[in-house]
Amino acid sequence: MKGTILVAEDDRNLRRVLRAMLTREGYEVSEATDGASAAEWLAARKADALVTDIRMPKMDGLALFRHCRERHVELPVILVTAYGRIEDAVEAMRAGAFDYILKPFDEAELLRVVGNAVASSAVSDREGASAPVEEWFGMVGRSPAWNEVRKVIEKAAASPFSVLITGETGTGKELVARAIHRISSRRDAPFLKINGAAIPPSLWEAEMFGYERGAFTGAVQSKPGRFELADRGTFFLDEVGEVPYAAQAKLLRVLEDGEFERVGGVKTFTADVRLICASNRDLKRETDRGRFREDLYYRVNGIPVHLPPLRERREDIAPLSEFFLARARRDLGTGRKTIAPGALEALERYPWPGNIRELENAVARAVALSEGEEITSAELCFGLSDPEGQALPATPEEERFHESVREHKRAVLRRAIAKAGGNKTRAAEILGLSPTYLFRLIRVLGIEG
Ligand SMILES: Nc1ncnc2c1ncn2[C@@H]1O[C@H](COP(=O)(O)OP(=O)(O)OP(=O)(O)O)[C@@H](O)[C@H]1O
Ligand SMILES: [Mg+2]
View 1 (tube, rainbow, N blue to C red):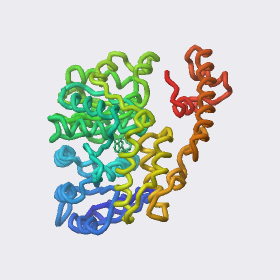
View 2 (view 1 turned 90 degrees about the vertical axis):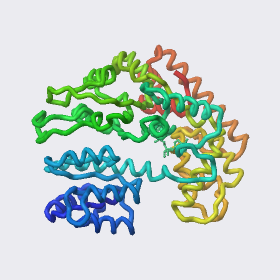
View 3 (view 1 turned 30 degrees about the horizontal axis):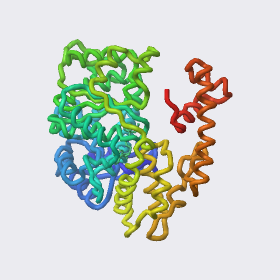
View 4 (view 1 turned 180 degrees about the horizontal axis):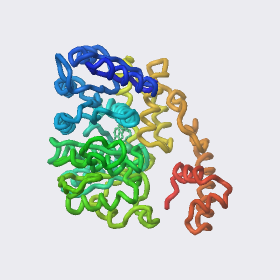
């Protein structure tokens, strides 16, 4: 099951259509016929997203949305509205609704929006946790590297410039983007997010800048884009390296003079938006390869914030583990559980290719699995990604052995890469490996360049 969706809709036929589309996609669907019964349902159970009509008897969609803002802060709310009432939806978006859909809607759009909402709720579900470790905007850390990052975040938040957050997967780029927004003077305005990789290239411009009626097949009415809705707030463009080349010029223009047109429109709109981008690719290199416009790169990279991989800030592993332990205990309602001292040392030695996210999952899984009060190192290692025999070694001797094998592999890879003149795809050929596997090795073994 992909998640539970609560559908609040008074029109019986529409409710049936929504249920059919969502069930087919693998969601569990619950229905409410008006706002008040939806609120009642939510008081007793948990949904991953709420899809609600705006016009409904008893409590309408907007009142329900406001109710959710107060009582179920993390629940993504998607409003369904008729074309004539679009202002209501826009208003709700600015107040933090997840998205809106115009009637008549098509199945693909509905599923995409719901899919994004469910994915986002899985992340933010765990954001508001409290733990004994000192927490700063939902983040913890105490390494010198992390303290440096914190200073840069504060500087970036105080400035009006674009911010480019880089770091491997799972290093916390999204959390940092949210922190910058919440510290900045734009904190009371909207924070809107788009994931460059989650939107099909053909829809990119429409999603970002909106469209006018008739701009393309299916554009039965005009719709403002995310950029317009983020006016006076912050726009988070995740995976900026995935923005289609053709759309990059439009993005550059809006960054330079704050102006844009909707797709298929002639009217020029303006928006005052701070852009935060994230990328786990080396954007500079994408520029050199001609896949990312150089002028845009310099615009986007106003203030660079680099998040080092977890293996380069091992002092953070202990506080992070504590933090995730407290969260997992609370989520699972288990009693006192602690991490055995030996197990913590093992965690500190592991290279964490999936970074903080991998640690978070490992701790949550161990809490669920563990039988006693102390979580053992075996319970923590269970299921760790272990592509290169790097699973937690039991003894220092074993660790020395593994490290020497890894060093040997690094040397072989470096030689092949040098021989291929820096071209990794070519290096993969030389070694008889698939490029995907080679890239994975490079990441896992922490090879520079
Ligand atoms: N400093 C931190 N303290 C506590 N939790 C953190 C910290 N950094 C990241 N996390 C948690 O780790 C997970 C991954 O973080 P996030 O989604 O921000 O990473 P990301 O860099 O955007 O990853 P990706 O590149 O894969 O999108 C999230 O569940 C987040 O809550
Ligand atoms: Mg991310």
